[in-house]
Amino acid sequence: MKTFAMILAGAALALTGATAASAETRQEKNEARLAKMLEGRVAGEPTSCIMTLRSSTDLKVIDYVGIVYDAGDTIWVSRPNDPRSLSWTDIPIFDRFGSQLCKQDITRTIDQSGRFTGVVFMSDFVPYRKG
Image 1 (spheres, rainbow, N blue to C red):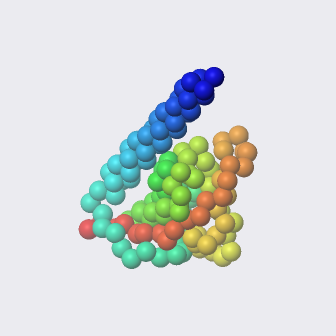
Image 2 (cartoon, helix red, strand yellow; image 1 turned 60 degrees about the vertical axis):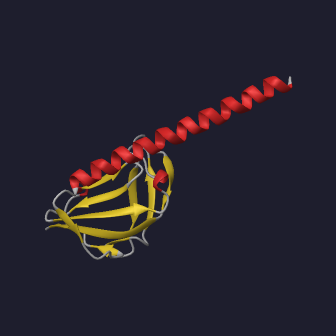
């Protein structure tokens, strides 16, 4: 019985490691995807709020990386405090307290079937402009 318990414990550790490795690989892949989007652009000074005048289709969730807002000549990137709190299936719902989108705004997520999936705590928005 003791041997069986050790085998189960080892299997559980192996599965946890595989899941973490899978998530890390997905994050690395999506970091590369973001880098490609930002190619030829230079990071500017981070800010806590941005104007979002264009449509919400210009807002993208990059799995395990952050939220990207394409404002044409500037791409804004905000990363969550916990990158794993943001999945590609998440739809962010921003409870704004003004006309701007701010990191302090409550950002809830729902999945594509409309079920609540969590709350995301975002960081400053970093502007990337063509250099």
